[in-house]
Length: 230
Ligand SMILES: [Zn+2]
Image 1 (tube, rainbow, N blue to C red):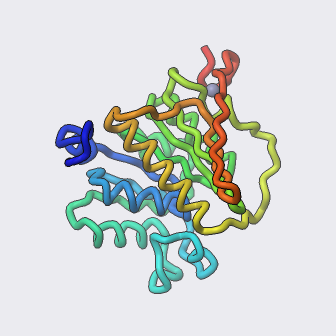
Image 2: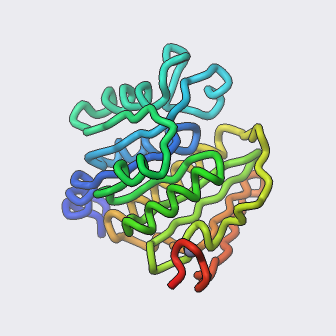
């Protein structure tokens, strides 16, 4: 509250905000930790998977005692231990589009951290149809990307993402890359929820951590986009 321009007003907005985190891995887990610590009042953690040993190089929400437990439940427990007053809901589900509608309706912001394009684009369709702002992000090797969407004001994920782009089966990543991308997405959520700064909607923000570079690529709206086009 002591930060100039932030104050009690922004802090109250965060307390009354509900953020849905889709995919609680390295990126979503880091984002959720920082949003909880920043005072976001209500978080929904959605993930179908369980914690595995090979996750722990990057998934800082979990530790070895969580091995074999559903990520959404282990993550919710960790966040409650950080702030017992936090409202946190764990959803262990391979979320279909109908489920996403129920989860996202009434949310103030969505962190789209799913790791497959089919799921990322389903979440994008739901966010556009319900007019909920969202930030999408992923990390790979020593780099990553954040793309934030303000429905009908910026390009959406379908305008930016080539659906036919081949996806690797395994995506090796250095833990700091998922951490930086998760924290950058949390920062985008805080900017959107409080109105402070610029959410950089419709810009691909590409972080190259090997050379400490941030590359911005503006994405124009596609007037024929099947999701957000007129
Ligand atoms: Zn679009």
